[in-house]
Length: 71
Image 1 (tube, helix red, strand yellow):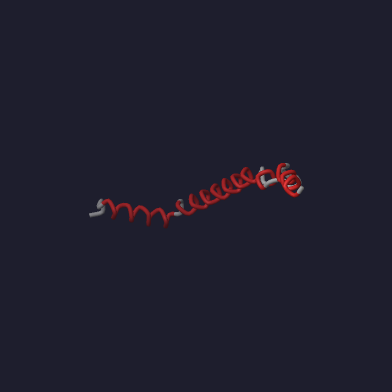
Image 2: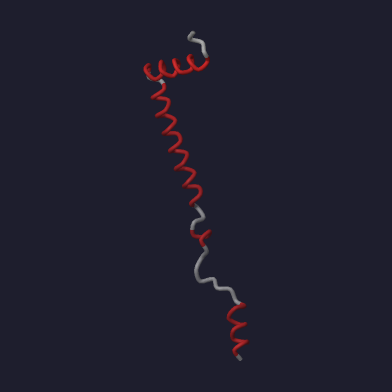
């Protein structure tokens, strides 16, 4: 009798709780959207910084010295 009861209980799958994938089905889209917005914000900030005359002159000086063009 115990074997029959054990076999009967283990043979039927439980479907009471949804799995993790089913609960978080839309999370990847939201994460990509947040990552894209963050990357665009960082790029806009970087462009604003690089366009300033002081930074532009410093970068040009570094590149000139690295290539040996300022001798």
